[in-house]
Image (cartoon, rainbow, N blue to C red; front, side, top):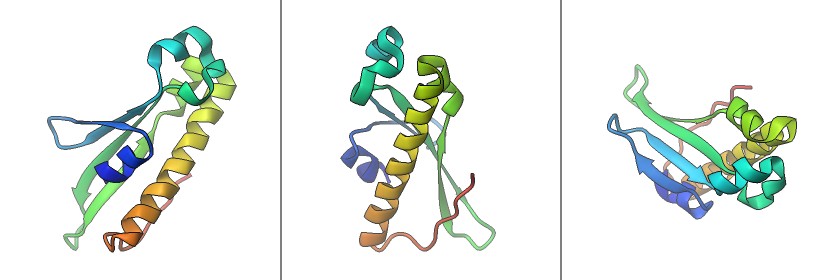
Length: 108
C-alpha cells in the first residue's frame, strides 16, 4: 500500500500504531495561496490496518475534507476530494495488478 501511495507522489510516515500518514503537496504554499496552490495543494490521507472476523487484512484509506476546506475553502475541499478519488483508484489498480486485493468497499 505504501509503494502504491508513493507512486502517486505521497510521502509516507508510519505511525507508532502501524497506520500510515500519506502527505503530498506544500503546506506552506497551500496556507499562503489556498486553493490557488494548484498541483502543490497540500493533502493528507491516513491508512489504517485491521483484520475482519475472517482474519483478512483490511486497509482503510481515509480523507479529511474539512482540512481541505480550512486550507482552501470550498475549492480546497473539492480538490481534496478529487485527489482522494484519484489516489484510491490508483491504489486499487496497483494492488489488483499485484494480486493483493480481494475486494473493495466504498463509503460515501
